[in-house]
Length: 88
Image 1: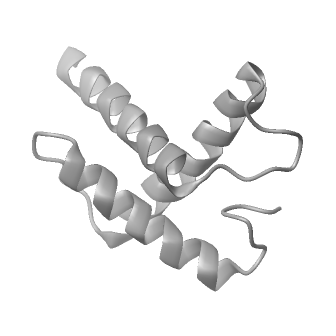
Image 2: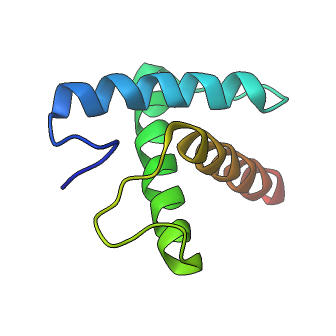
């Protein structure tokens, strides 16, 4: 699996952490999550952005989403999770 343009897991975790932190800083409101969930958020944001980009035609098969797209994907995921939490 190639994510963030690399198959090195340490690199993926580090960039996932940075993307998750940036997304949490840019989205208003309080998101209570630790470092592990922040890393998962960043990685999931990159996967989501890559999937959407391939569906729209912005990315080719196997092409990784960029940092900005990954951050936007993570913000979208934060908004979705926040909306689901409020419904409960």
